[in-house]
Length: 329
Ligand code: UT7
Image 1 (cartoon, protein in one colour):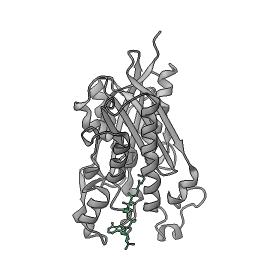
Image 2 (cartoon, rainbow, N blue to C red):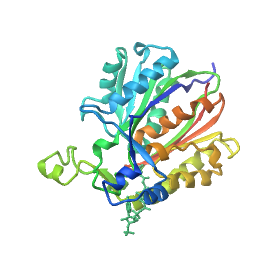
Image 3 (tube, helix red, strand yellow):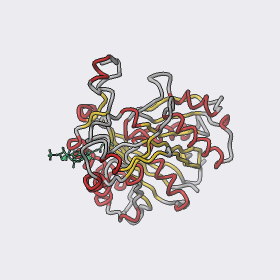
Image 4 (tube, rainbow, N blue to C red):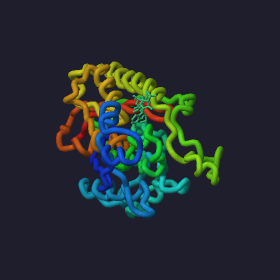
């Protein structure tokens, strides 16, 4: 019997309607469109407005569209891996909440927390359940309502992040398409440079933590940049080497969208021209777990069966990694 690979058989995405432009940010913090564009590549980002709406509400849109595209019902889903840094609630898992909202009555699920590398970790771990034969339909969701953990008085972080969510379906493939390889890495000593200070068990919420904006993203941008630019490029080059892929063999690079300069450095290290790189950071900013599936969704109509695709990400933790997959449809 030929080896079972986990293939992406459907992809969909959702971004909220509200557009937060650099121009509007100029009226909120001391910044300029010119600074944001030249330092990050971002022009605008989407914000989820509406009382009581969380990350799972964006996932409902993405997943319902995905099920329709694939022509299956929610009851057929066996496992939901919800990659997010902004779950609806500390518990239960957003995977459970999503399963209830879409009617995935036969699924079990869990949330996966790996900051901006979450979707890569999710695809890689979801693939194991397919390859082992345990499951035949695994939903990997990547999404964040980053606006819920942003201090809109902090110009160093509020210009970067946005809200959005994407999802892919993994199914078995015995024709040699799907996830071929993955490299996942982490270094917890990097947590000091990018984290949320309060709201966890070490520092529960209090009046003081709220007053100090400790429930918002804390980032030392330059330090993170230095690690991101090296590690994301290294891991993407490593997965190419390990699979004997030349830059000509790579059809698409799908990088995490944190900073256009990090994306360009990764592509350059791989020797891949800009025409092969999916970039939508200018419109959505950094949606954390949403960036890679949102790119796949947006470029879906251009993808062809057999395309060699490299996913690469770097994020808080630190976490980073790369996935090599052969597109299956
Ligand atoms: O996705 C998870 C992983 N995260 C990342 O990969 C993010 C990595 N880091 C970055 O993308 C960049 O470091 C940032 C975009 C966050 C910042 O860009 P930078 O080029 O590293 O700027 P910087 O922090 O070195 O700041 C340069 C200057 C400073 O002013 P002085 O000290 O030189 O006077 C900042 O105060 O720019 C100032 N600055 C701003 N100016 C206008 C910082 N933020 C802003 C702003 N508008 N929004």
